[in-house]
Figure 1 (spheres, rainbow, N blue to C red):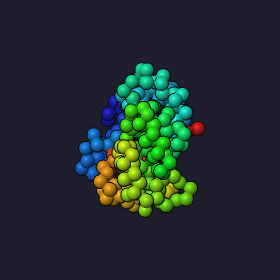
Figure 2 (cartoon, helix red, strand yellow):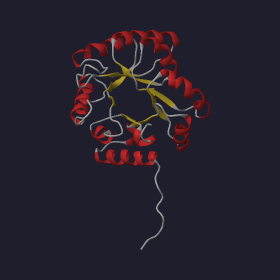
Figure 3 (spheres, one colour):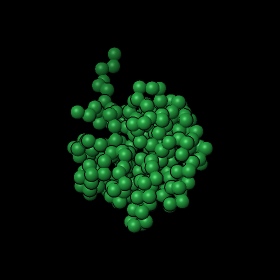
Figure 4 (tube, rainbow, N blue to C red):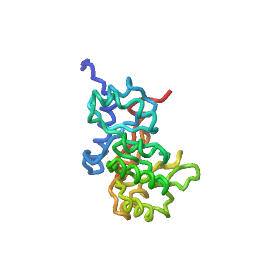
Length: 224
């Protein structure tokens, strides 16, 4: 009987192992899948251990919260990348362009106009995912599906780089059909990036083509 103590994997190691396993099943390269550690509401004491483990891509929901936390963290880890995954107010567009490396919540013409103006002013072109209201939910942000082709064209014409599409499926419903639909919309519009999948369903998202998964709870635990 082997009594050798088994080493316990960190949450980051566990998630990365699941990503690798799912990618093998889907016959995908893990290098094509970006893990965004959703650090919203987490303090530097929770974020620093992941940085120390070597993880570099993080997601924040609010511009102001990111402004308060990340300048100090980036002094020690200047190669850390920040993705804005929450809804963005147009009046925060310039702050977002200055701070973030990618924006996942471009969803309406007024925000597009503000981002284009901010990118022209700063000279920084930030890749943006267009958030799609994939479940046609009144209470959720996102570009209506029927307006998506025109909105993509507007973004390209404005000089805003379109990295792909993003969605948050309706709660309490099997997400796979929504992920598959987003993948079809991206393909139909000549886009490769797919920001979809969270702690509860990221393996399903990877199977259906996700290039960016947004994982918080599986890495940081339940928020208090």
